[in-house]
Length: 352
View (tube, rainbow, N blue to C red):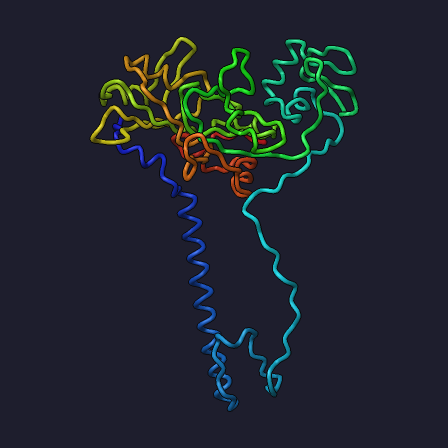
């Protein structure tokens, strides 16, 4: 097997293959448009020369020359509708129920948690419908019922909110902690009035990219194992990592909860072999730390630098920002650039 000991920068760089291809297509279109404009200007000059009309440069002429009309004075201007400004930030959209939906999906759309977490709450008997405890996550509701979680009424979220947080150390990835420890929501007190929750989890001492939202359907997609969303981490270990252990990460390890292997791994810095970049798609608990511990290394620090193509660029530790409209769109439609690919080049995203 070919060793993957190249720099971690090839995993975390911003310019992806799809971006390069799109830039090439845009440049090609631009060149074609320029060639057409140049040809059109040449043809205009030739026609006007034959008809004895003074040549007007293409910069001043905005409409094709019509040789059937005589030029007599300036042409009247048409009234065009003013251009509307486009905002890069996604506008919140209200969620409207159409027919019935499973109870766990309803709870997720209320901004409590994701659909899988909602299913667990329902099975634990914490959700009631019209005063009756329901233990079946698939129980159908129309939204007209009185649905409560631990005695508190639930309501569908009015706005969809998407926030990227650069998580610092010593913060729990949860909405609340019975022991009174710090949670990530404390960093977002003034971000929104909507009830948001983390998508997936990061360990208390793991830092980096964390997405928070009240969009239960999106959270379900990004955390469901079948979608195999890419995650990239940078780990600093207690000693240099041997090349054979990098190969072992790529070939796979048999942990206590099953087989696991990295999708890619390499040295972040060839001068410092204690810094390792690793790409995985598994969402198992503490999986990166456990992989290194299995090989005899202790993880001194672990930072998630990418999650589903979202990075912490320009977001300082402990700070946050709203996602842009394009980022939300890519997440919702599962952009192919952050879906894991097989050796044959086919993505592993299931049909929807």
